[in-house]
Length: 293
Image (cartoon, rainbow, N blue to C red):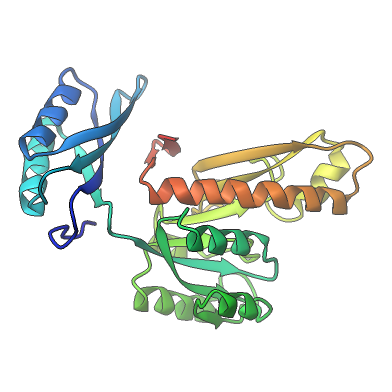
């Protein structure tokens, strides 16, 4: 989960995420612990689930004058965790995560992610693009990203997924982004990357889950359509929701109009969700995504 920061020019930064049973003194003790190992808090956000009596916090820390010893930081946090029954993780700021993007034929979300990464707005490395069609290979070539065409005759095909998983493992992928990938991953696949697969669904979930949501919306005569970025789970379109967006439509809009309008929402919603995940702003708690945006 962490990488040695000793070779990086100061200041070194990290994000610490904690979850523990709620009790007095947690914030003070965590602040003191980070201070004891030379850390300076740049930003801190917290949330208390009153019903579940659970405390969650995201702390952005810097070491402005020296590179910290990772083992010292880890030992201090673990000692605190033992006292407070705390789950925690740390991500050093310079350690860019490796991302794989799954696509089919539509390219708007893929283009947006590639441009954002190129311009430095997404702190990650898009290591490969996997598609069940060959159509977008030229897009990958344009951005110098390896492209892999893996035919998928039907959702959940074990042979295809085995090849896809092999590619992910060979490239040490940290996050999978389903950028209009029009196949459903099997529970076996999803369980290999829990909380690390982000899907964009072209509907304001939980309305119009599954296929052809714009057709469903048109038939119902809705006045708002939207898009939902969520973590993929074994249950289709039911994972924790990270971000959503909407746009107004009228009875004059055809299905094609809704698709066109929806694409603008899809790309921005997906980009925000991916960015927040990469910045460690999302914590999955009690089946929901808590977002420290």
